[in-house]
Image (cartoon, rainbow, N blue to C red):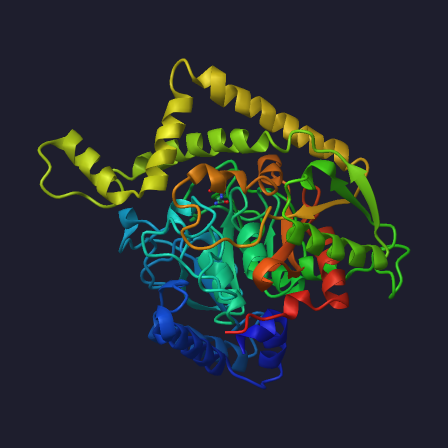
Length: 508
Ligand code: GLN
């Protein structure tokens, strides 16, 4: 049932073909079947509370019976466990994939959770979606494989010996396996687009500032952005419209009038026809996104999707993003620097795990942080502290900031020549669990195609584009100009109307 996706389920609810309680019950059964199935399941969920979910579903059905339902009321959704969920409203703990926060009960709901769910206290009612639970992720969203979670890895539904990608691995795997119709996720350097690509689902990371970061456990605040993983561009448009918009509690939230992204997605382009919906659209292909080392299977799938976009009327133009390779060192200086500062609050006093048996205060801090954080988080805190320290600040952090600006300028130049940018999401399909455990830098290098848009704050999508080695999904990345989510979704939707890659399902 969840595989039908958000738009179809919303229609079925509106037509009274199904109730929210029936939908929630089916999803809960699918989650339970997966958890108790052979091999111990996918590990996508870290928290499920069936009684709470069914209570929300009953409330949604009652709202509909009273004639107060919005289009998404009663549709199930699950949240990446990096969005805080409150007691008593949502009744779910928040861990951010870390021992540090095990059992943490937030006093409030993240704006994203509130807007999709019951609404913000004292403000407009929420969309009334029903929460199925919290989804596994890399610890504090640091990672590309979901193997950095303190609560175990997530498996890829297409091949359970492979990673689902990360850090939003639980979100992508749950959608791909049909356990949920859609999920929230966050992207700091690729954590929505890369797992979407690895699991064959559609994901969108909007422009920095479109969605409030209030209640998102912070990793690198100048990069963190919330978005969605779903079965189609249409489903992403519906969810993103409901969760985005100005929020006075986030100082970087964009003060812009709300946009109906679903309407923007459907609006025909000037000069377009039914056969050529993308007529006049210029898609830029950065040379640097097609290096000789790009895996052949990924290159083939991406080129097939580009050929489809051409058939739909788009024109492909060559562009340059000359600092693509530099985005790796730039990101892996800036993100750890911000993380080292953001994670200072987890000291066993203000937040988080407190160690037993400490000799004094300093010892308590040391023991609490040593026990609470996993190895990747510790590595990044050390790198971040180093690049911010006296004497190294100018050499690393300041240089990285300058380059970040130049990377954004490169995009600005490209958008003089094209309307959207396209390329691969990742250099390969999903790798085997454990394959990169010995060398974190290998995983960092695989972020090369997602980091540039993150550093520039631009919106990006991953759209299924067929399969590569081992029958594993490959995603096409589309990058838009600032706040051009409508144009991105329009192109992705046109592609999905003409092809069936996004409808393919893992066998098992
Ligand atoms: N893979 C990148 C990292 O490890 C991106 C993570 C993210 O977007 N949250 O930092």
